Length: 376
Ligand SMILES: Nc1nc2c(ncn2[C@@H]2O[C@H](COP(=O)(O)OP(=O)(O)OP(=O)(O)O)[C@@H](O)[C@H]2O)c(=O)[nH]1
Image 1 (cartoon, rainbow, N blue to C red):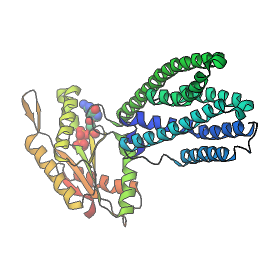
Image 2 (tube, rainbow, N blue to C red):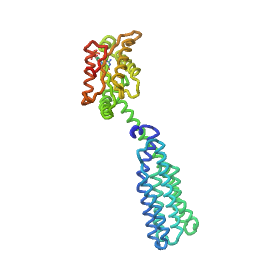
Image 3 (tube, rainbow, N blue to C red):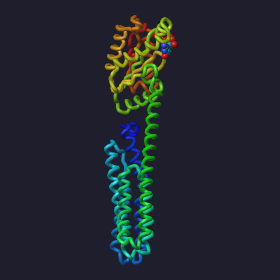
Image 4 (cartoon, rainbow, N blue to C red):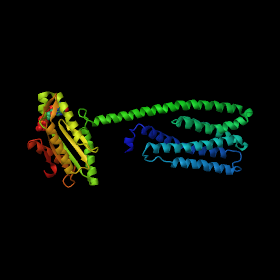
């Protein structure tokens, strides 16, 4: 199954979209955590005196950056693959958030960070704001990430709440705003996804309609034009058989003339139903190519198998005719049957022409018969 066709599956699309969004939005994040730490450390009063801590935290944020960047989204096969990728990526996001929350708390706690504590606090506000707006696809996880960013710092401020009251209250208020913003952003995100999904499904429906003959529900000429060259190319490349049966109803004009156009339509529908009963393989493509001309494309079908099926179709049609208003009318068809032969057919058009000539010959020889293009 291609990604394109999987996207039309209602369970697959939201996860696929979410993983794409997560990937795009996480790209820059890892870098800014590292930068914020380097600034906080570098502008502390004694960066060299806290070298082990400085290097340790730098390594941690570098590692997180590399892990995020290298956690790529491959050609994910199933919804379970996507779900696993999203879970793992959230693991990285939450771990980075915890790392930064602790770094911020440490910067608030230790006096050597006094000159750079504003950098750390501003960074916490920036990271949690970005989190609330950019990662709102999962509310619980995003709330956890904001808590991990915020709570360690708030706890440190609370320890010394007499001195830090203003900062503590401001940060706590901003925190409540972030939770409200996250809630709204979460709803907006999922409304947008639902709309997009509806569009994808609508496009699929229109696409299906444009490929289907509305009277018989078989594939139409447009579908044939798309499918035929592709199947011929596959048969040529993989050396697999491909058979084509062209069918034309005999004297169909008489039905229209004698019983009216709507009876002619009923006849075409019954004819298509009969085709579905005989050519039953999933891989067979049943098509209405024009007025009363039909085609069956049969991949992986040898000439003899195609001939047997075509003959069965012809004889059963002859035997049963067409029932109209409790009357049984005679109904026959002429058929051209052929298989793609790379030695003889240098193009899809040449193959079609060969089978079409066989159909023409079946008509010319008296109708209600099969002519094999391979021997014509
Ligand atoms: N009811 C109906 N008739 C259609 C439709 N499309 C084409 N036709 C009719 O199909 C008839 C085809 O007539 P012809 O091409 O002379 O073929 P035929 O009468 O089947 O004769 P042979 O093919 O030579 O055996 C015409 O009368 C068309 O109007 C359709 O969608 N509905």
